[in-house]
Amino acid sequence: MRVQVAIVGAGPAGLLLGQLLARAGIDTVILEQRSPEYVLSRIRAGLLEQGTVDTLEEAGVAQRLHREGLVHHGVEICFDGTRHRIDFQGLVGKTVTVYGQTEVTLDLMDARKALSAPSVYEAESVSVHDFDGKSPRVRYQKDGTTHEVACDFIAGCDGFHGVTRQSVPAATLNSYERVYPFGWLGVLSDTPPVSDELIYTNHERGFALCTMRSMTRSRYYVQCPLTEKVEDWPDERFWDELRSRLDAKANAELVTGPSIEKSIAPLRSFVAEPLRFGRLFLAGDAAHIVPPTGAKGLNLAVSDVRYLAHGLIAYYGNGDSTRLDRYSERCLRRIWLAERFSWWMTSLLHRFPDTDAFGRRMQGAELAYLFRSPTAQKSLAENYTGLPFDD
Ligand code: APR
Ligand code: PHB
Image (cartoon, rainbow, N blue to C red; front, side, top):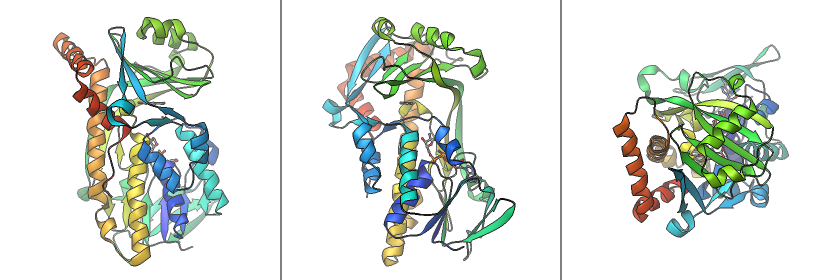
């Protein structure tokens, strides 16, 4: 088999890249180690910046998103039992859209099927070869047979634990990492959201977030120690803990119900540099991880893919490789800004086990400053709703 671009990973990054390239007449294959059902069963965040919505429109997959997505004009931050609203629309004239990553993935899978573009699910032992030379290839096993795909380029969209980043010679890759000393315990439930907008809470007992997927499906998170197991958290214990961290009004209005998903996610910041190694490009979680506090994970994956797709389209369109040459630098500029914002939001809102009384006061003072300063709120709004693209 020969294609122009071989894509490893069928998460949102790989699928979106495949879709943007297919629409430009560039042929791809997507190799994914899991089944489509497994990919769709992973519950991830669900908050889209306007730039992400624009890119999904460009990919022709935004119809259902426009029908079902919830447009949010601001968020609330709760400290000391009082909520403060950050008015995105008023501060920067922008909004965000609530639409689950699972739904984005499903729309992209359907679009790929409609174009009859090839995807190989349950591809085992995927490996990448000669991406620094003239004839890049990807090998995989399926049903006991080894297959090889020859290509011009390889896109590593295979997430944090994927094979592509690990195939790069260690000496050519720099990585930067921070692992936070806590996780998020998340619950999905078919109950109406406690509020029309998201509520981020900084509480003595730890961080909590009230978010949603629709007007009938809620997503809640509480910060928990990394030693906790999901089995330790029957629904009642989760709802009690969430209630203990919410303000009185939210507490009174919270509707609880059986969880339909419950999981614990660790919090990590990670960046790999550079993002290009000859004819191999890394994109999305393969290249970087942000803690979920800033809601940047999916948006950053989409912004990498947008730069990569435009670079490849220019290359195949008129032989112009300048965009591809600038891929790493352009992505990394946005990535580090998103890393900064996600780290700042995480530091501002969580209870850190090793923080002393002074540190706690400083967190309170930083929040007090945010609530009184339109400039600080504007900065939050600018970053949360997404920085502009430089293309
Ligand atoms: N071979 C083939 N596929 C692989 C391999 C491998 N060796 N390793 C991982 N994969 C697949 C995974 O099964 C997964 O489906 O690559 C895909 C990567 O998808 P994601 O982890 O969703 O990453 P990405 O597409 O970059 O999306 C980023 O997802 O993790 C969230 O917060 C993140 O919202 C962000 C978004
Ligand atoms: C979510 O809806 O799951 C979500 C929203 C905002 C975040 C993190 C997660 O910051």
